[in-house]
Length: 77
Image (tube, rainbow, N blue to C red; front, top):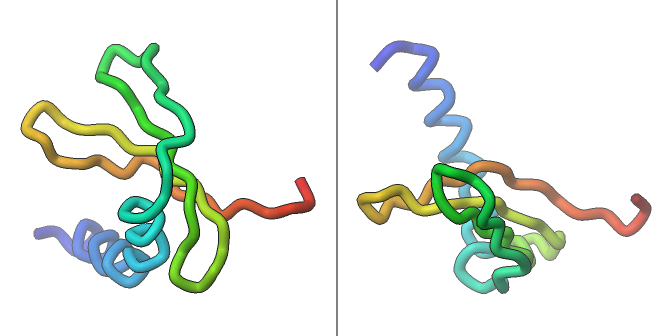
């Protein structure tokens, strides 16, 4: 694996706990069905540290989950 890919995997591994709880315990807030690649899901929930977060994801044809975007929500938008 090239070094650039290794670094991204390390980064993802260190941050995975920030969004895993959102996916496992959150609720599907919205289904986004207009993308030709398949339905995307916006899941909203709480990270283990208590922050409210949203995860945008979709399933590949083989059933794998693809994480597209992860963001923490703030009250002062």
